[in-house]
Length: 99
Image 1 (cartoon, helix red, strand yellow):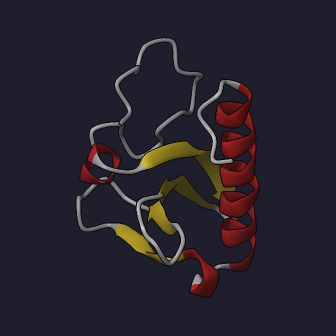
Image 2: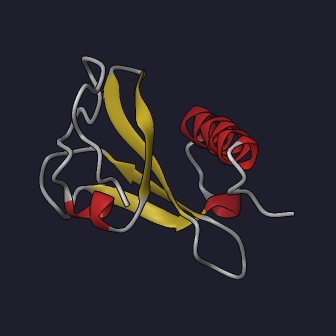
């Protein structure tokens, strides 16, 4: 899904664009919260709603994922939802959103 890696802003993919999570999730950007970096993403292909994809380290097992509705990290969850909504607005504007 993330075919374009060139010209990313400094700080993009803090934990690495080659983390296994980005093979099947949509990257939404990186944040720093309470001294920790999180690469935020979404796995959109679920009937029940999107799953969050939150990478917190370089190793492929250093991530959190699951139902976005029950994600417990307050600010990280809020920022993931905000960025997901912005992403949906952008693709809808390009004719790619759901009707």
